Image: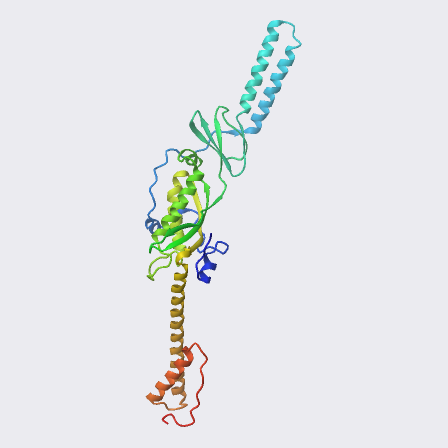
Length: 341
């Protein structure tokens, strides 16, 4: 159940169907300024024991032709053995044809088709022997095992998480992370399941960021989840990068898709937001009214329309402030006498 902020303005700003409250994070985590990176309490992951390097492979077209030629030669030798009457040469042709055909078939087992956006992690008897990233038909040692890993860009969206912010208020939030595999060797050998690893670490990072900052900051200089979406999402990207770097994963973008108070405090927070909005609006009205009254008195004095003593100025200021600051239309009162009667 997705419950949004009780304020209509905030709901439209944080709803998943509307543009998220944050902008796209820099695609490369190394480009984020160092002071911002130093301010994030990111976990320290162990150094990788293996990193990706290109596997030795050749074009598969020639290997395919040689393999088919070997199969044809083996079949031809076996067929030729039927025309030989001598036992020795006949047996030699049959055995030789079988060996040639088996060798050609075994060599053809080293053929691999690599599609764009995919890679093959090559292992020989449990030892990492490199990664094939060239697309097309490639040939490697047929005794190796090849694991397919997608290097395409992926999305991971967390479920709506309910956590307490820095002030202890229960809030709901969700995030989407755009990522891809950058180092196939680390993704295969450094973690058990890199898909599950990314999902778990993303949820942990979102929860950690949520409890570090309040939804709305009472201090004007403090960061808040709603008021400083750009800074918060940059910190989220840095922490995500630090968490999933061990799995050879690159974070391209992170964005909050849902941000709202929990239903049990939504009505109370609505009243607080409404009170703040009323106070802010009244402050703007009073500031504008004071400026208008000041301009009116200045024009009257400058053009010499009427001479006003201090008492009349005070009465005019009072009347203008009531008219300009009142939330209802003023009711005029006509004075048929003088100001002092």
